Image 1: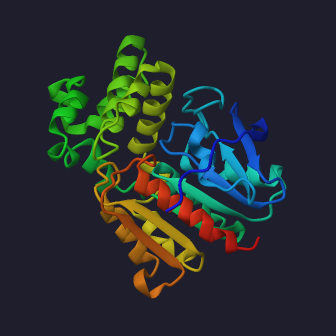
Image 2 (image 1 turned 135 degrees about the horizontal axis):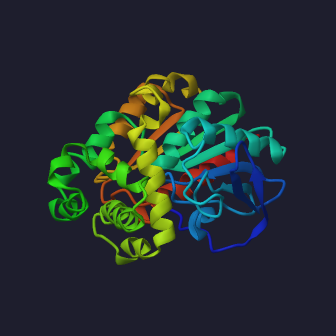
Length: 321
């Protein structure tokens, strides 16, 4: 399995004005005439990171990174206005046309895998293939597992801290209770909830937690965008039918697809990736590669996951635009 590529700078960047008052930060790296590939970050609300570009060989790929609405360097920060799955799908298309890219490979992990599925199912003709990690499809069962009842059986101590900021009388709907506070007028309570929401997810990313993950919570600006936007999407079920992305997987079954999944992923359990794989045809579909890492959780920074993602981008070098 290949390591991440050594750090390299971007070639150019800018802000793209889209509908409403949203201005999206984007950047290009690598080979300006190379095979186009877009990186879709997780969260939603996380934003791209310095390591996001390092899964791709800069000599081969024209790498495009985008901070989604309200996230990262996009403005307005943490905005929920006109911020839905389908707004983001539209933004990706606007950016593709803005950069004069005919077709590209789509790469996404966690929420990024969800957005990649939504985008590719709507704009299949411009997708050359997909590389997906830690599959998330926004089904009710996935959300209830992590935010209500399920993951607390594995991390009861950390879940206790997550629910402690919500009055006991409201704990039968923790997402709803958090949303009320994250969108309320009490700034102190808003920041407190943003920190607790973010810490719960960041403390469950790996089999062996890394203090550097949880340390991100100290950045109140980041935590607010992460928690507000995630909760906004989740209480609204992503503005999709329950199970829609699995049901419509047949639309992309002809594309080359690599699925990378940590066996002990608590945030996005393996069952979701398995359901997607089966919906794509399972073993009978030779164009889909399903890889499980037996000693990994959810984090894209875990060595086994990183290795298989870079391995996938190496294999995709054979794809012709």
